[in-house]
Length: 447
Image (cartoon, rainbow, N blue to C red; front, top):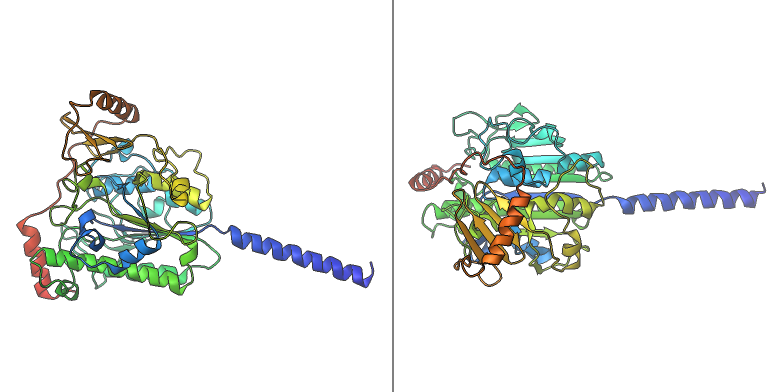
């Protein structure tokens, strides 16, 4: 072959390599960051009329899509199970907040982190687990876990309600000083800073604020000195949450990763009586809107419209199939998702029809369009039209028996084969003890 021929062949080979590299880089799936608040009510946010100032969450809303009809389950453990598996948690008998030593999530299930890990993602969980002992984080698809396993801890001492240390790094207990949610943000920032630029990552930061016990750093609470207790301390907790969100956003910006990261912010359920779910009815541990319609925002620059609001009904069990679709990853063959893929609706900025869905603990709510049927554990039934009555003030059961019958039938179909409920969801702690603990820790100057 002549010299010119060899040069042309070499040039073509180099061009082919360059094209292959370019294609590979462009085909790299996006990172996913899920920021999960704990007991944050709809009416707690500044943008919804709440007293706590939340500039970072407001920034997210300005850069992404605020989900006006995002539904979690009424209490912590069911929501976390639905997020990881895409399934209704009652399939696994999870219909209440788990105790630290409960079996909880069965071993071997297809999970979102396990699916992403199989596709090459680095998978990280920071913060609260609260899904039992049968399949702890490192056995459920996470490469790394930093946080606590049980339902709640003292944010300063990291002790559970029995006085035992519940704070670990990858299965090894660690004793550290610092306010838990701040340590969680520290860890999330470290993970983002250390990520391999050529490998996508999944990062779930499950903050424990503003969940009971009502404790906050003195400096955070001092910003709300004009408010009575425990409201001032709870606002201090939300301040720490918002600062943590801000730090995650800054870390993504510093690494130049914002444009290639799907970021989802949401709460695991509504607020208890120490917070606000206004304008919705009731609170945490109920299937009324105040217990299950949660603040939620999703951002993916260039792929989702910015500064928009979506009325698409979406549930926490939809997130597994929806995030997989967004990343181009197929669901596992053995996944039995109750959720559906809503990425086409979100990315197009439209509201799509979707199958009826259920949100449940021992009480259940079945949704179809704007209609909602509530069936409590004792069998009592109510029917609401959320389009005209989002605050659920008018029971239309007697006026619309046909609609109620159709929703009862659909609820029975969805729940066919489920185990009987284990018992009523534990009511959220509240009352004088919260105010005393919050005020006591605040005056003690912790954190």
